[in-house]
Each structure stands twice: as C-alpha cells, then as structure tokens.
Image (tube, rainbow, N blue to C red; front, side, top):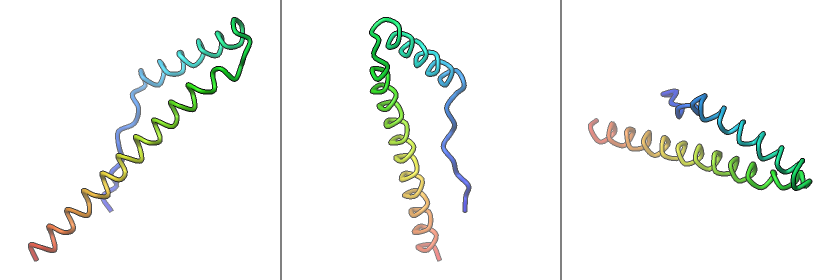
Length: 75
C-alpha cells in the first residue's frame, strides 16, 4: 500500500474558517437571534469538504488501478 493521503487543509484556511464561523455564529445569535441560521453554511462547507476528499480518494484508487494494469501489461 502506498500510504497516499491528500494534503491537509492549510492552517491559515482552517483559522479563517473558524473565524468566519465565529462571526456567523455571533451574527446569528446577537443580531438575528436565530442560532440555526449558522447551521446551513456549516453543513454546506462540511458537505463540500467531505465530497472533495471523497473525489480525491476515488482519483487515488483509479491511479493505483492504472499503475497495476500497466505493471501487468509489462510482465
């Protein structure tokens, strides 16, 4: 097994996401007074992240299968 893993999220992006979440939560709680308002963007961001990681995993599997097929073709 190759041990391939997609690169992690840069810490600046993670920090920016946390800051944005905190601002949205503050806005939802103190101005709009609807805490569930912040749920939609968080769920959407999580869905997009998991979808992207899944796409990268499928791409890595396809790449590995191509390498196996090329190796068998050479042998």
